[in-house]
Structure formats: C-alpha cells, structure tokens
Image (tube, rainbow over all chains, first blue to last red; front, side, top):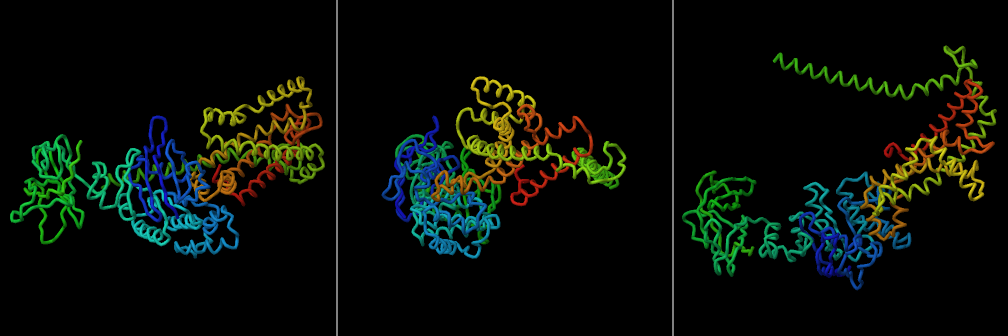
Length: 350
Length: 280
C-alpha cells in the first residue's frame, strides 16, 4: 500500500476540460470517495490514476514513484469496474490468478494466494465456476478478489455497486469497507450516489464540472458546505434568494428578514436543511427565526414527513418532521409557524 | 356485454390470422431456399442418364463415378488447397485490420472499412476481369510469371476472404466489453498479452465464423477463378462447369451433393466447438 498524490491534473479535449487542476493527496490506507454528478470528471480522474487516460498536465505519484507516464500494466493498481469486466472464458480461480501470472509468480505460490483471496470475499467454494454462472453480487466479489490478490499499491473502484440491487448494495458496502480496513488498502472510489459515498468514505471529494468543489469529512460537507453546489448535492437544501444586509441580517426577495450567520452586504442565497427546520407550537420558546406560513404540499415518507410551507409569495421551504403518533400532521392549507436557529441557515454570496 | 365479446373474438381471430400468415411466410421462404437443394439431392440418385421426371429407378452409380473422374478429384484438391491458404492469409490480414478499424482513432477509418468490404460488393466476374488485366499488365512490365499462376489465383481468393473476416471480426469486437481488456491491462498485461489472452478468446467465435465463411466463399467461387486459372489448373466449380458443357447427367448432381455434405460437415463440426450462431 502506498500514498497516492495527484498534482494539478488537467485533461483537455479541445476546449473542454474534463478535469481542471485536480490536486489530491490520499494517505496510506485511506478510503477516499470522489463524488459528483455524471460528467463531473470523477471517472476521468480515476482513469488517469489507472493509466488509461494521459493527463494534459499534472502528475500522479504512487508511493515513491512518479507513475504519470507509466502504462496501466506497470502501475500496480487494482481496479474494479462497474461492469465487473471478468474474463468470461475462464473460471473464477483463473480470473483471480491472472494478476499473479502477469507478475511471474511461481505456479506453486499462485494456488494458495488465489484461495486466500477467494476466502476473503467468501467465494472459495465457487472457484471452478465460470463468471456467467455467478450472480451479480458474486461476480462483483470475484472482481474485488482479482484486484486484491497481487497486493496492489492502490485500489480503484469505479462505481462498483451501481449494478447491484438496492438490498445487496447495502451489504456489499459494509463488506468492501471492512475488507479495505483489514488490509489497510489505499482506496479511491468513484460514485454519484451520496449515500454510498457518505457511508463508505474516510474523506470525500465533491466534484463538478471537472473541478474539486470541496474535500472533507462527512460532517465538514454536511455542516459546512463550501458552496451552493455542495450544499445541494450533499444532503438536501432549500434555497432562498435575497441579499445580505449587514452582519447577521439576510433579507429575502419576498421581504423576510432572517437572522443568520454571515457578514457583508450584497446578493446572496440562504440554504436551509429541511431536517433543521421545526414546526412551532404557540407555546414553544421563541427561536431566532419564526415565520408564519401555509402548508401547500405534504409528502409522506413513513418515518418522516416533508411539509412544503409557503412563507411569502416568493418563498417556499421544506420542513421535515418526524412522524409521531402524538403529533397530529397538519393538513394542506393549514396555517403553521416555521422556526429555525440563527446557525442553521448558511449564506452563500451569489 | 355482447359488444365486448364481439370485439374480443375479433381480436382473437385477427391474432390467429396473423399467426397463420407468419407461419405460411416462413414455410414459403424456407421452401424457396431448400427446394433446389432437395431436387439436386434427389436427382443424384436417379438411375437414368438423362435427368427427367419421373425417375425410372434409383442408383448409387453416379457417386461411384465421381472419384474415378480425375478432373473432379484434382479440382477438389486444388479448391481445398486454395481455400485453406487463402483463408489463412485472409485471417492474417483481416483480423488486425478489423482491430484497427474498430479500435483505431484516425481519419479515413470509415473509408478503410468500406475498402475492406468492397470485394463483397463488386461482382465476381468484374473482379475476375480486373485481376486478369492487372496480372497481364504486371507480367508485361515486370516479367514475373503471374498470369495463370497458383500464387495469382490464391491472391485473388484472399480478396474474397478479407471482407468476411473483417465483417465478422468487426462485429465480435464491437460487441465486446472494452473494460475486460482494460481489466487485463490493470492486472499487469501489456497490449500484446491482453490481445492474446483476452481479446482473441473473446472474439474467437467471430474468427471461426470468419474462417468458415471465407473458406466457403473461396471454395465455391467460379466466376473470378475462371479468369485466373492457368492451363491444367482447374478448381472444382470450374471442373463442374466444364463437365456440364459436354454432358448433363446425374454425376453433376452427385458432385454437388458431395460438396454440400462436405461444407455442411465442416459447419456442424465447427459448431460443436464454437457457437457461431451467436455471431452470424
């Protein structure tokens, strides 16, 4: 295992920049997830690390080596593809043995190593099967064993779970994460699924339009999003347009005066997390912000309920409340009061 | 309620009509393809020398005559030799060419692809004349004995094989998951090893089908070969044609039956190892 360093990675196709000045340092044994919508450059970045795309500028270091100019077969990176990409014409064991064969490992040592790798992914009893005789989840584990067996310096996972059904995905997440910890694998995973990213990563890299928007822990991204894109992409936010009117005072386009943390003056947007807003009973203690509104739409999600509440002709927010039997749900058209503390809203200059 | 039933029964009957029409069309097409073959095979067993209906009796004597006819035997051997060599050369050119056309990113890729498929479009007789003139001119200018040579004949047949190899191997390559090759490379295989260990096994059905069709195209070719054979060098289709100029008796039918059995046998044998049905 080794440390992975990307420095100023840019890939240009004509005028289009698929990745724009990506710099990232992945520590030895760290699990980093590149998260972003499709076309954000996360897969390009991964393929540059794997060696399938030459960057226009920048360098990739793996451990002590500069691997920028090396072909994929000299990089010692274990890669797991979205489609698993198993060799269809050979058995599971032969699939796993391939990387060892390429490294000229003596035949006598290959079999025990393959057996061990298959044991790690709990497939030792299926070693003589062909890939097409396995389920999607099993194929995925073979792909993982194949990428691990030769002790790669870095493990690269390209949307490894997106072809699995939802139930299985939850289990495999945990499985991959535990295996990665146990073996101390430096890992980079690419995904567009924020839940997957949040549950698996040590650290997340949010990307859009070829650039890194924010790097940080789950809490960093959720509590302190660097910009509107991150506030919207990680978790949920409703945005209210308006302007900052001096320190701590945000005035919405519809004329609501909102107490919020933030300084300066000028056009800005206020991001509010639906789960941080509350419905106020008349008896409740006053909060920093407290606005009347009418319920316009209700979406019932089971354990939670989303209320879409109009605060002014221009502003509507989503309030997520816990669904509890002792608290009757408001009806559409009902007047309610919505409250939130000063520290809840995040202001982004626009 | 009655109205509903009428609609329902109308729908059922129209579906029935559709199914019957489909069956009829399928049967008709199949008959159209198979009938000539059935007649040739039937004819081969007629006892009388002049083919006429109804048969006056049945006999195997025509089949006995075939191996005693030197022209048929040597024609078969020559056709076999040419088809095998031309197929091998055609594969050696066609497979790399297909890889280039599918994987390459260069200008003129589409043009190259069309060029490689061209011999399939040009009528065989035109191809024959063109090659004949080319051989004559080349021989005049270089003095090399090309005209009527075995080499010239094989070179012509390679042209017949190339479009088949390019087409079928291209189809296999297009249908292949690129990620499998990338997986091999990430596991430590260089380009050549990847091609040998991963790409070739994946496109093998295409290669086998290509060899088969290339072989058949070469083996059965008459019109181009007519221009390229030299004195004393007669392929099986030409031997059949020459025989027909003098005689029409069931020997020809017997030769055809043997040819059908031969090619059919190769197809069945190949299909046991590689399911070419998935490719073609």
